[in-house]
Image (cartoon, rainbow over all chains, first blue to last red; front, side, top):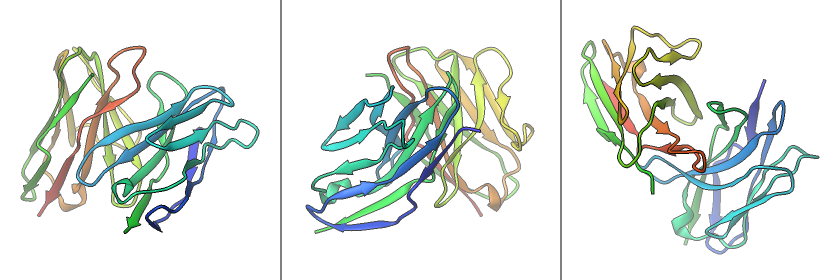
Length: 111
Length: 115
């Protein structure tokens, strides 16, 4: 079945460090891929998305490229800030109501 | 933009009591809303799909009689946790899709603690 495998974490980085959170997926058909962010005490917010192979989603300095050949959608940011501390979820959507989430990766950025 | 409002944001209740969580679409109509549950250090799991004017569709393993869902209008869905027990303590989140150009829009979640 459809699923998402995500780097578990937690991840702790110093401010301005480079961030990579790995995400791979298994899906039938051609899914759309998403990264959601959950800040402390808040619900999920869409961070970025990509709907087809080779698309690059980007927002707030974060990027992820839809790689069909490696079935991956790794999240990257060149220089993290303390305000990026949150839980990040990779997700895929294969149908109108089918949104599958990874287990989430908690990122803590220290000054 | 499209907003999903969820209340309360947190609630503490005693074992055996029932708790109602509301999910509202503030500036759009939602014929369908989704309820998720998030255990600590785990991912969100879809519990059920709420359909306006008809019965909810529950995912496998979710007790219908325990998690009552009502979607009486195009802007409101409610989840009632009946006869709550400590193992029901979790983070519950609702979502909806405002339209074809939107993705899932999530409420801010409700943290339920059953003591």
